[in-house]
View 1 (tube, one colour):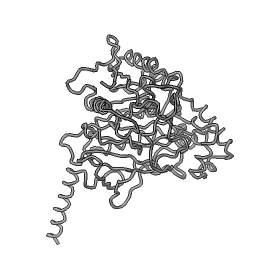
View 2 (cartoon, one colour):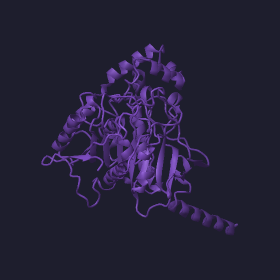
View 3 (cartoon, rainbow, N blue to C red):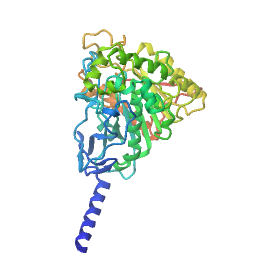
View 4 (cartoon, helix red, strand yellow):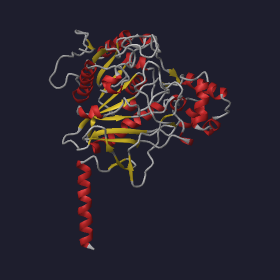
Length: 456
């Protein structure tokens, strides 16, 4: 018996050593063991669909994410989970067809994805956490463009975090505020923070550095990042941020006060014929999404001042300096959303940032238009712009120009190689130049530098 016990102990020790060195073996995370699969690139493992919270369904609809439910055995993470519930009909804007998801939608959507080297590094790697955009009511982590292999090739572990959208993610109501004891709405923001918290607590087991986390997001993902930056609940959770085409001091992007958001929720409930929260929770996810999609409220539920996660408008937080004092890289595309006026609104954010004595940020403008021009019969994009339009940088930041349904050239591939290096260098060093470069100067009062990113 003693001999058998010794053999068993030696076997477990060898198994534990394999787990410690090789990401192809099962890894113990919150909830149980997960096993990844080989990614498209050699030497990289991907874990698709790791639960980071309990499914937000039934009585957990419109509650902050709850602890993940433990599972037995080893969970094989080889498929993306469902994308967050959303209106499907407009998921493919005509001006851009290469970043769309290919999975089904469900309210049960709180599963993140990790890309890391199969052979664990001797030194913990920086981590980048992606928050997708989509106007707070569209989007997912399973889109072909949002793959993490290029980041791992550039020395960074990549994690994509989903969040509830639209009426599922931002609905507020007096009954919900009473139920929680501290306001309502912003469940999507709680999801995002829960994902980041999971990363901080578990990523070391994948070879990542929990003390070197960069959060980055584009469009609604950028504004989500600004909400996270402006929340006291985020303190110590990440060290760097890259808000892309969203974060700013914007006159077109104010957060609703709790009372106004609750009033909107009351009106929505009445409009779809529900008398109370119980009836609203009794609706199936499809019934609720269809009612929301057909209502005048579609697209109106978004981050708000709930009094707990967010205690003031993000514009006011920026003006008063009530946000995280961390490393920032911030920017926009040359012909970005006209109403946002990013040269002015991001410029105001940066100037104010410096007035509070925060570390000088790195500011960029992405000037390269999508190759092929107007390929979809549209003279303008959905925001009324042409040229280097909103979202055109994504294929380059993710080094995924090969997924574009466009006539890419060697110049596009070179630009993508260079762009992802700026992003990953910033994650590694807090400096897009890397450890030794100096081409991209930070934005200071003496040198108001906006770095232009374009094809050579």
